[in-house]
Amino acid sequence: MYPIVRLIKDTVLASRMAPLEITGLHVSSHICWPWDLDMWMELNNGRTMTLYDLGRTMLAQRVGLIKALRQQRWGLTVAGSSVRYRRRIRGFEKFEMRSRAAGWDEKFIYVEQSIWKKNGECASHVMLRTAVTDRSGIVPPARVLEALGHDAAASPELPEWIRNWCQADAGRPWPPMQDGLA
Image (cartoon, rainbow, N blue to C red; front, side, top):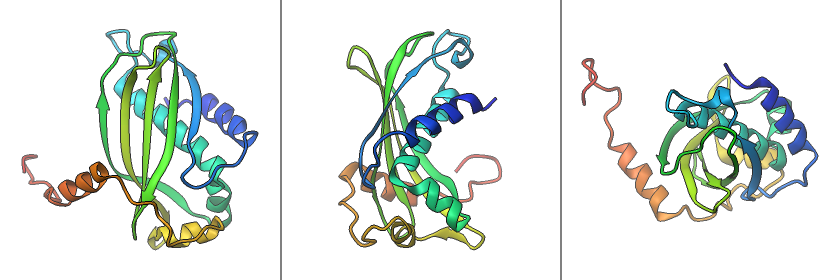
């Protein structure tokens, strides 16, 4: 089940925080609750991705995107992701999430997020290819940035590892073969 109570709480918290620039870093604190655990008593990988959703929602709130989505009647989607899990998060463990827009191209906005344990170790890291959508499909980031009052042409240079991921993903066959193997 989607954590609606957390979503509401986090949205209210983010609305009370100072606004961020489009590439600003949003930092949030979380707890791994019993309903977040898998059968090995650690943060479930699916729930991790849901918590990352919450972090992106808070980031979107702080950069003004939620307001623009409502005004323009736009939606959000994830068009791809790459995640690394390196350290376990156990029940009742507190952790910090860091979320930021790394940059954009003519079609997508690339968001980087990470979860950090209290001892300073990175537990997981995800890079997401995201898009704003309307009835016609994907809204170009330039149009989104204009709605936010930003210079649409001023994307920071994407880090090399994100550019490499984009290039590798572009070579992936789509749609996959019927038998599920490429």
